[in-house]
Length: 208
Image (tube, rainbow, N blue to C red):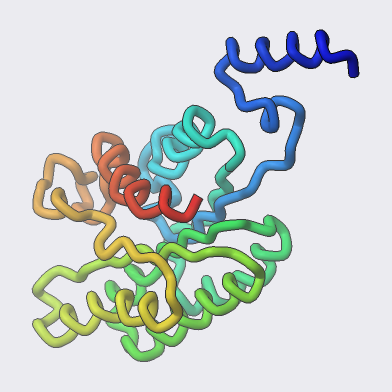
């Protein structure tokens, strides 16, 4: 390509605010968000969920990445573990954001089993070449102090053991604010989604 034309194209890229590698069709790296209703935008428009907002932010700040949302409302860690391999083969992610466990807690499922499932999914994703971000949750106090404490630390233990990144609590700083939840008092509303994104982005950007 003539040098003058090369320089002209570079100037066009810079004026448009687009990195040349992205503009000429370099393959994007994908982020797989693998969660439950908290990531599936339950009860609100899909375009206003935190995962969709993440996609918009990536377009502005990291156009070399795209996001795939494979979250399913009601999913448990056992269900997620059973279908993860297919998702990894289909999407070939560079990063997996693992947001599962809340439904295990709400159903009072054995915590040892939940932690084993989370650890197995971390290992699966890492074996596929992906970096992993684990998103933790907390249970309300009515589940008893022992269960709630053990539930909370299960995510940190699994992440630490397998050298994965961690967001300790997705609903940090607003879990006690009813105005940021839907009437069921379980699912965050549209106004809470940017807060969830910021909580995830703080750790996710270190993996990009």
